[in-house]
Every structure is written in structure tokens, then in C-alpha cells.
Amino acid sequence: MKDLLELYWVYLKIGCVNFGGGYAMLPLLERELVTKRGWTTMDELRDYFAIGQCTPGVIALNVSTFIGQKRKGVLGAIAAMLGFLTGPIAIILIIAAFLKNFAELEVVQHAFAGIRVCVCVLIVQAVLRLWKSSVVDVFTLVLYAVILSLSALSTFTGLLPVKIPAAVLVVLSGVAGLTASLVKDKNGSARKEEGK
Amino acid sequence: MNIFLNLMFEFAKTGLFSVGGGLATLPFLYEMSANHPDWFSATDVADMIAISESTPGAIGINMSTYAGFKTAGIPGGILATIGLALPSVIIILIIAKFLEKFRKNKLVEGAFYGLRPASIAMITVAGLNVAKVSLIDLSAWQATGSVGDLFVWKAILLGVVIFIAQKKLKWHPVIFIALSAVVGIVFKF
Image (tube, helix red, strand yellow):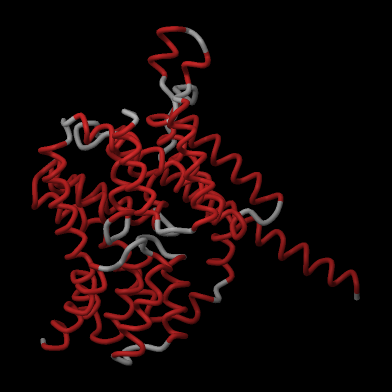
């Protein structure tokens, strides 16, 4: 029980200072979990991040679950998850309650109109950052264009007969990537055979 | 369906299908704002991105708390967030059992070859969605018919300035968000 409370407490602290999420969390986790407590190693942390990235859900939360699981099994994972969520939930509830009361004010509306422009830029920058590791050849470029068109058409226009849910696009692109990489592998090994 | 169950279900779906973290939840949030206009609007999502960048916590987590609260008060906020977290926690618990195999699995790698470009394509559309409520003004264009009125020029100017400044200065996003709020107030955006 004491261990579970400790997990919860450590993750409560991490959750409260986790600005930006994702890899921004790595130095913080290194200090709290590797250096201070020796709960995990830097190599393990890097593995957790890699897997956290290729499994569904929030990366930081996935990494927390791994470490909780490693320490104390399923209950440890749940303690780490709840600890990690407590801070953000409390902060957002306070902000949401505040916005509910002040959103009508003209000055708040002007502020958010300005902020939205900044958000636009942040998203563009995120896309540019991810571009290099994602769009690597003709296939991925075509897939990017196809998903972009389908998603934009279903979001902004009524031109498609049905709106395609985002979940369907995710599954389709996973299957397409799998098929393409299998075909590539097969061609690659066929060419090797010919070379012999 | 009970509103709490409905919230949990919708956010569990988001948690299950948003691969790649962070902004990958955006397409699902926009979809939800279209399917449940009484929960939150597309403009709310844009504001939530700003709040998430300025507070601790991932956008998916923050958005589920916010939407749950708006829809069904404090219990709604908590349940929606747990709904978002549950699928990935279950999946990680399963994967933790055979960690190494999963990482080097050819099938997993192959799926990601397709998932990565798809994910940023959908984030691009989310960006267009924010642009629609910040950089262009459809009603002014419809009223006057002149293409020049379609664009909110001062907003576009601010966007370009932030883009260049961020590239050169590499400050934390929260600083740019705060400065944009001030510009919005001063220049009556």
C-alpha cells in the first residue's frame, strides 16, 4: 500500500509539471525516476517512449503505465495513471469553471481570438517537425495527400456521400502501410535472389 | 444512453484510435464537436489547444476533462478523462508482458509506415480547422463579395510574425500564447 501511495505521489508531481507532454517529459523523468529513485534506467525509459509512441493514447500516460506496472504490477500501473491524471484534471476543472463565468467578457474574447492565431502556427510547426520522420518516400507522400483530402472533404464539405470517421482513416492507413511494407520486403528479397 | 457512459465511450474511442500522441487526438475532438454540438464547439477545441499548451498535461487529457465538465459537471470531467486513459492503459499492460518482441515486430513497423503520414495529414486538417475560425472570415466575404475580405489580414500578419519569431527565438509556446492574447486585446481581434 505504501509503495502504491508513493507511485501515486511521484506521478502526481510529474503530472503537475509536465508542460508540452511527450518527449518534453524525458529530462524530468530521468531526474525523478532514474537519478533520484533508481526505479528504471535511461535505456528502459527510451524503450518505453518508443513503444508509447506506437501504441494508442497519450505518450506520457503510456510511459507512466509502464513504470507503474514494472514497480507494482496492475495496481501499480493504475496508481501511476491516476497520479498522473490528478493534476491536469484539477487544473482544467478550475480553468473551465473560470471560463464558464468569464467567456462572455469582450476582453476575454479578443484574447482568445489572438491566441487562436498562435495555435494555428503551433500546429503548422508540429506538422513540419513530424514531416521528416513520416513522409519518407513516394508511398508515404501519396498516403499523406489521400488522407488529407479525404479528411478535409469530410470535415469541411458535404461532397462525400458519407462522412468518413477518423477511426476508419487510421485503420485504413495502418493496413495500407503494412501492405506496402510487405510488398517492398518481397520485392527486395526477390531482387536479392536474382542477384545470386 | 446515460450521459456519463456516453462521454466515457466517446473518449475511450478517441484514446483507442489516436496513435502518435498529443495532437493526434485533434481529428477525433473535431469529429466529436460535429457529432455532439451540445458538448463543445470547434472553436472550443482551438481554445483548448492554447490552454493545453499553457498548462501541464496532454491535450487529449485536458480536452476530455474540459468537455466532460462542460457536458456533465465535475463527475463528467473525471469520467471522460478516465475513459480516454483506459484503452491505452489496458494495451500497455498487455504489451509489457512481451516488450522486446513488440518493438521489433515487422508487422508493427509496417503499420507505422502508413500510420505516421496519415496522422500528420489529419493534424494538418485540424490546423485548417483552426485557420477557419481565426484567419478567414466567411461572413465578411459573403457580405461584400470581395476576396480581400475573406482573409483577416491582421491575424495572418500576426501568424507570420509568430512563425518567424518562434523559429529564431525558440521560446516556450506559452510565451507566444500569452503575447498573442495581449495582441488580441490591444488590436481588438
